[in-house]
Length: 157
Image 1 (cartoon, rainbow, N blue to C red):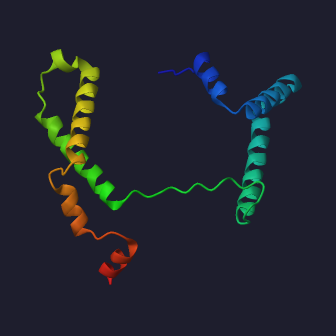
Image 2 (image 1 turned 45 degrees about the vertical axis):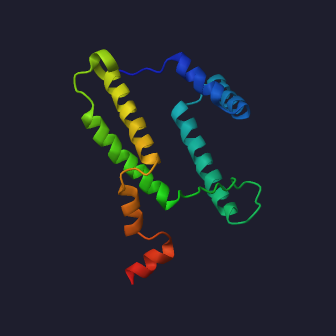
Image 3 (image 1 turned 180 degrees about the horizontal axis):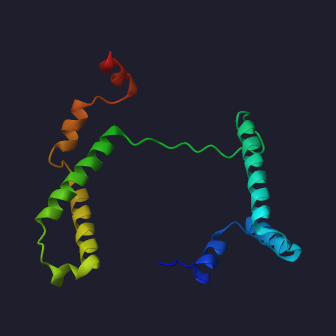
């Protein structure tokens, strides 16, 4: 099986890129094209430059406020109750999906599309059922596992 990238896909990616980076990449490719340079050798040289830039950036990350350091992104951990609620929603989704009729082509459609719609319906029903009081799975898990790293350390000792 041969996979070829369509020009539309390439153009969409190019349009989504940063305009400054796009112009720099286009200029480098034009320079390679006009110089009749060996493409593999040029790519190896660019990889070496990128690796050197990356190692230089890693060293500057240790210094706060360094010009080349990327912005720090803090990822907020979800509340432990939210994790248990999502787990309960997943379990309920599985229950609902097994309860839905198997031969329901007239409702959901045929083939893969019908299966996707059926799965999406089960997912939404599971989420809505778990949003309220649910069936108690999340509550039992939260009670069995105390929240916070201090509680986990105390439980282990």
